[in-house]
Image 1 (cartoon, helix red, strand yellow):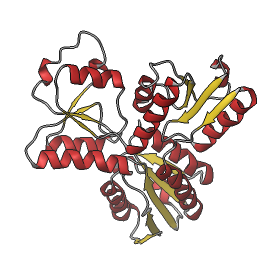
Image 2 (spheres, rainbow, N blue to C red):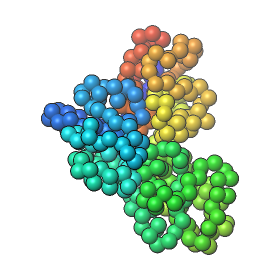
Image 3 (cartoon, rainbow, N blue to C red):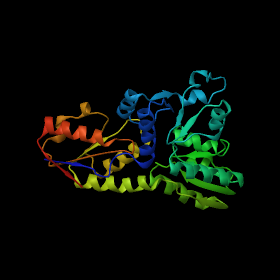
Image 4 (cartoon, rainbow, N blue to C red):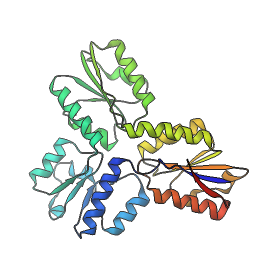
Length: 294
């Protein structure tokens, strides 16, 4: 049996930026408090918390009447998903220091939405309405945007005179293409900006290829990671013997019976050390393979 670690897997640039900021500040003995979970990977979060990272529920700070005094001596970290301009205004109003780790690709989406909203366009976002990135993006059009995800959601768009179509940066390309096609049919003036992250797009193809080449795929990620769910669905379509796990304890011996090649990969918030940990577990308990990279 060969174990193949996907050499393209690991943190995306936005997550690399956020984690680097945290590790640098903590190494300098400076405190930092993330607005929400820094990334959707509990094991990596636990590692960073052991180093000193703190966390506060972002939704509480978005509510009126929240007591900010407990945070007065903290530096707040805006995670890669970004925050709404309304929340940023509150942070600045109360005089708190903050570090902005918003992904550059998310910033591009924010600027596009704000620009076209000011021109009178109805903003349509392809994404998950409760995802932190999408919630933040809505703030850049005064929360008047329309979020679509499932076929038929296009019926929610009443005013089709001037539309801007954008995407959550980690959404599936096929879903975005569906809404682009649907809106072309009825919009008087439609501007399409495919804001899906180029790194994410490449990862879709890379995971597809890996799944085709391996007998079994072990996909390692946090269960609440949106981009990971999309990537795993791509792997599973190509290879039904694809399994989603968050820790080595979830591995099952039956998965590796009569298997020649095992591929290990993960999402944009999966650190490389986790993939190595899974490889070592498979080696020690289910086989004695030689590692290769593709």
